[in-house]
Image (tube, rainbow, N blue to C red):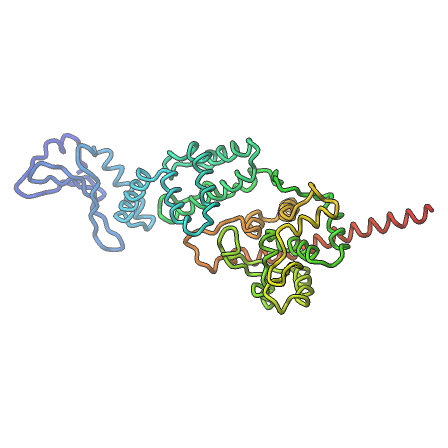
Length: 407
């Protein structure tokens, strides 16, 4: 017979614990000291289990029945109620202990040893200045996508698009860190690639896509020297100028068609794999005929033991008439702009630019993340550059032909 509040109140303690039954396995245990404890008797895969549902009257009859029904639903779904209860307690403990800022600072601790000190300090400062004031005190599992978007858009509205983009990436990594530790089950910072302008305002000068074909042809027509080859490799690899000029032949894997840079040569202090297109390989093979028996890919004319200087590409661009219009870094910006415009996956683009950082729990083999997609993209991009250059060459020939015919 189902219990009533009156029956429960009139239940008196005895010398030994005893139970009175409500239904569906729900029982009330009365102890010798007068405590009244809710118990649920159930079967899980044929084995009898007992689950505590709280103490009466803190848990009244109606609430005890509600808890019983919730447990029966879990059993029907094949979930172990005791384990679910323990997991929920852990989630609540995490929720009460973990704010976004606390999780982010734990993530910082793991990253500090791996990152360049200057970059790490900048990252922490950006979070303290822009992120923590917005979502730092919020429980980690309550931060929503709109809150993150609002914080990122406030940064981009100030004109700091690159900063906003970097923060967006790092926020996503903090959530991945929290998910791996059970602090929440979803990543509200995922799929936010389209909330920022595709072409970022950058202090590094870069020609527009419309101007790019003329620049490509100018590089192609340039006399053979270190600066020409270096510019061609920046174009076809997306590497930073400093990474190109200090390149070593030992980093080139001809069989795999890859340029594998060690962590000490990368800004993010992580190894980086660059898939080499046919065009990039052709440039490297030609250069290999000149310096392949030595350590560096490029050697300074002033020293037989040193590579070319960091200003080689910039000075060449100035001599070509691109002062203030194009820089070595601008080639990376150009690649990002063209590929984003053609709707390539932004995560793949960012990984190729070595912007996206890998999660700290991933092992070194994941340095080749998105390798298949990046290999295809790099060949596509080299083909795009060739098509742009050929179009410009035909246009120049056409104009030359018209000029001769008019004479």
